[in-house]
Length: 364
Image (cartoon, rainbow, N blue to C red):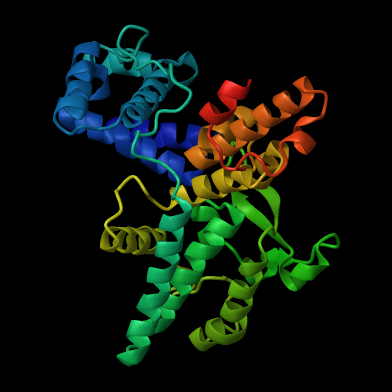
């Protein structure tokens, strides 16, 4: 009976166009609750759910978003069992003299009250950290080549993959699923040649929808040099004539997500950087650095595929130097306006351009 319930719920989620990975995770989460409770769904109670969530929070130290994800799965399963259209309630009453109930309610459900629930350690790389990461990745290629190890090709692939993920603000799966045909020309950026635009076909999907597509324009000339070296010199060594994937593996057509995670984590740890800097931090860095460099926020929002500017703002962690420059520019503009435009000429060569706010505070 339990297996039939799970199979029916699986089919219902397929009918709702949920992604296969989402369905597998939710079924796995429901099974995990059932194993912890030591009971079948028609025996579940809110108390059993509370005990499990207490264990997840206090013993396993799961994050808030993880706990809420488990609750979403269990709530959805219980809603399915209680829906009269599927007749599970009547069948359980007939067989067991009881029936499934909703064990997640407004009393014990975790509220989604914060706009962002990621751990405080999650942040973008600083420019210095990013350069150190790139340099270290390049060094690993040279070390393996000098030792005559075949692994230099994989190291070169991973170094290039990390740079490209940053250069275009990509998520992990967006990076992994790139094909050679996804790069093209940008008529308004002829200087980038064959790599003026990147067509992302496996963007993050909305619930019940197909992967979201977007085009990302190339903004940094160095990214073209990185791609040309990869496609012209190194990727052909993998023997990828029939493989459309940008990042092939020696054992599979396409590199796996676990390889992507492991490689960046190993480089980060070797450099002594904190665990909050993960692969997604490359995307955070892309947003932050574009904003710091003066790119229009709307352009940045379109580049990373966010529906709302508020989402892009979550990714933006501008440095103190950027804020200081912004403050200096605004204060100088205010003073210039207050003095009738005479500030530029009267103070030219008198004030140091890097003077702090205290220096102009007395003047004001």
